[in-house]
Image (tube, rainbow, N blue to C red; front, side):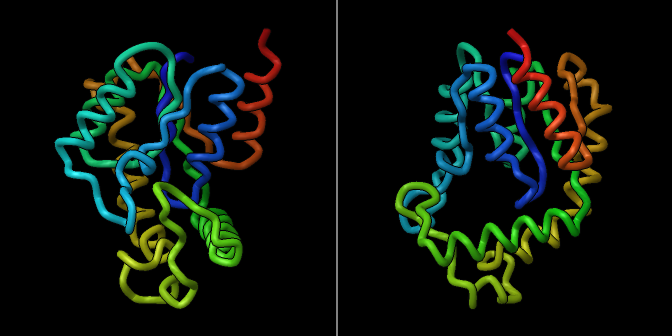
Length: 181
C-alpha cells in the first residue's frame, strides 16, 4: 500500500482512517475536503479542484480521503494501488456522525480553511446542503450501490479494494499495518 484512497459516506470515518494509515505508512495525508472547501464554505472551481488534486497525487506515496465527482475519481482511483471502502451499517454511521457533529459544534472545531460545523439547528434542517446528517442519510444507499459496482469496473482492475464492514475490521487492518516492520 503506497497510494490509498479511503471512501465511504459522510460520517463513516474516512479522515480518521486515512490519518491512521498516513501515520502507519509514513505517507502524506490528502484530505480532499480541505482542498475543495474554501473560506466561508465556498466551493473551489471544478477545474482548479481537479488541478490541485492531480498535483497532490502526482508523485510518491499518499493517502487520500473523500468522495467526489467522477472527474476527481478519474484522477485518484487509477493512480491508487488500494481503495479502502468503509462500508459500515447505517446506524453505526449515523451514531458516529451525530456524536462528531455535536462535538464539533460545541467546541467550534475548525474543519478546513476557517470553516466550522454548521449550528445544531441547521443540522436538523430538511435541507441536505445544511445538514450533514440528512446528507449522509440520503446518500447512504446510492453511494453503497455505486461503490459495489465500481469494485467490478474494469477501469479499476489494477486497484485492490478493501471493503471494511465493521469497526472491528477497521481496527484489525490498522493493527496489522501497525505491526509491519
